[in-house]
Image (cartoon, rainbow over all chains, first blue to last red; front, side, top):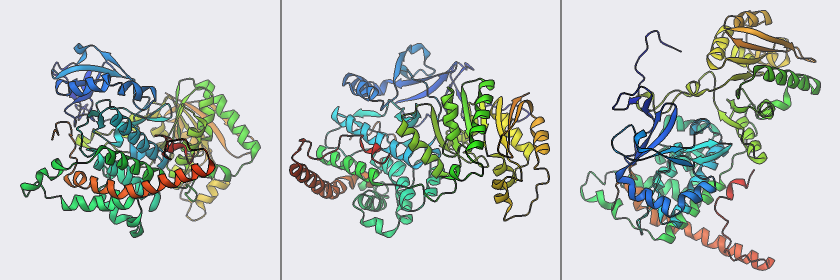
Length: 482
Length: 63
């Protein structure tokens, strides 16, 4: 993962003073009103003088305090103007630090849906304060303490009465279109968000959705008719006269409220039931019984206690049984799984329980989210965001080694690159789950044995403990990076 | 029009079509409100909100 000669980090724009401890966030450059920067490990946001009137109104109207009290937007403190890294700064604020940055293509259906409803709620409250949400990007939402929250406090501008919603297109492309495709066509179409960083184009969504969706009271107008209008007006600028068609468009305040209400109804009406995906109820189908499960839980808890630290990444978390176990030991847990149904089930359970210590994310270890966008730096890769003290990998290694042919030393090397402590379960070939993986293929894995496993992990780690899980053929290993 | 801070292209078509779309979607919303009001009247527990759910409550509907 590292290259021999260090290169200047792409997308990392140093401050004019060339202070090596400060740089502009590579994902924050579109908005002339301000940007996010890092200084000595702290995240700041600087605001341009041109945005002063909107910012003052946002604070003076009480909108910020209201949104903050309701956990709709991230809080911030005022910071010294001297902290700014760019002379265009008028104010500097220090937003509440985020636990972790995640992206819409790493969220389950309901995570994206909750982010959408949060965005509409912010627009509703902005309208009441004489403002409007000028940016409805899904990237402005992050999950903090288990719940979605808007992170861009520069998203509100004073509303111009009689104007349509400037972020309508963005909302439909970032939220409505992907949610509709996931709910009405196939959950895997959520992956389109990884391909289209500005949101799923509406003409593409209209082509992919079933024809009958055209007659849906919400999707018909907001996706199909909307896509058609975009096509009709696509060349407005080129004809010269038409460039102002959008600028001339008017809309009453009551119609604006109706539009938002309809978007909310449409989003709320989109449902997806995780039944039928590969892993969603996998936990109920494991090969060992209650006794094996409690022996495994006891072994995991003992290993966690010995490992210390604060943050666990539970890889292959499924619906989060062991993520919860870790959270109950006081850890903050990221629960990563490749199956949209498992992540959805996990998120719903966490939301229902009001848990604030587990973040379920969708991710494939054999193809983790890459660095994307401008300079391949705008959206960072998943592995670069791993902040784990402990990697928990239960009932996972056989899927990587046999299901995806990853050699065991490569599995060990990846884990070693992610965290100093690794708690990993070895499931031998005699286990029914591995038998299932081997049932339809040739066994080309002569090294997939407990000895081969010990050799592979021994190359990167020192052994802390090795615990056979009673009532099963499995073994729990705790390794510490050398 | 002051588009200084619309730093993302709002899309000409997306602006032009909004009033028409808002008109179209108003019809089902109008009927739903009236149905909700009628249901509330029958139950005798009209709360005066016209059947409109408080903002942000939708997300717990299917939890």
